[in-house]
Length: 218
Ligand SMILES: O=C(O)c1ccccc1N[C@@H]1O[C@H](COP(=O)(O)O)[C@@H](O)[C@H]1O
Image 1 (cartoon, rainbow, N blue to C red):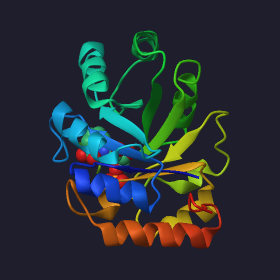
Image 2 (cartoon, protein in one colour):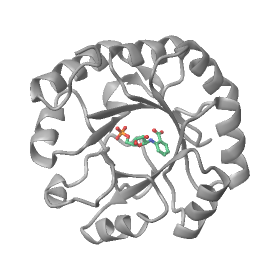
Image 3 (cartoon, helix red, strand yellow):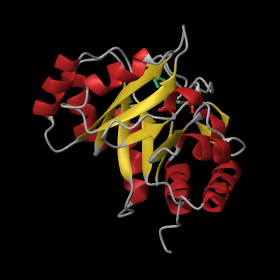
Image 4 (spheres, rainbow, N blue to C red):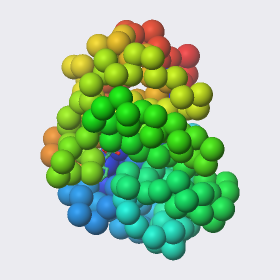
C-alpha cells in the first residue's frame, strides 16, 4: 500500500517519517496554507532524505505551469499534486512540460457525480486523490468524505484516499474503502506543519494490523 504523509516542513521530521515507512512525502506549495514551504525549505528536507526511497510530491493549487516547474526543479520533486480547480487542458500542458514527473489530481468529493468528474482526468494524470469537500478551504481540513460513495470506486488507475484520516479511523477506512493508497496530513500532526512522530508510528502500527501494509524491510 502506498502511504503519503503530507505537509512536511522540517528536515528531521521528513527523514524520520520516511524511516517509519512512508512511501511518499508531500510539501504544501500553496501560499495561503499554514503548512506552506518555499522551494528552498523543500530542498532542505529532500537533502536530509539522502538516498531514501520515498516519493517527493509538491502540492499546488490554481497556480502556473512556470511556478510548478521551478519548484519541481529546485525542490527535486518526483511528483506534482494539483489540489485546486485545474482543468483537463491544464493537466495536459503540465504533462507535456514535465513528462517524467508523476501527476496526481486531487478531487474534492461532495457527491457521487464528483467521482465521474475524477475519471475524466484519467487520460492525462497518473494518479487520482480523493479528498473531502470544504466550502472555504482547499485541503488539510481534517474532514472525511463519505466513504460509502467509494465502495464501487475502481477508476482503473492508481488512487489515494485522503481527507481526515487518522491513526484512530484508518482501520475502518481501509476495511470499508479498500484504497490502494492513503494520504494523511492534519491527522498526524501537533499543529499545522509540525508532524507528531508518535502519531505517525501509531499509524504504521495500525496499518500493519490491517494486513494491507507490509513494512519495507519485510
Ligand atoms: O494541507 C494543506 O494545508 C493543504 C492546503 C491546500 C491544498 C491541500 C492541502 N492539503 C492536502 O489536503 C489533503 C487532506 O488533508 P487532511 O488529512 O484532511 O488534513 C491532503 O492530501 C493534503 O495533501
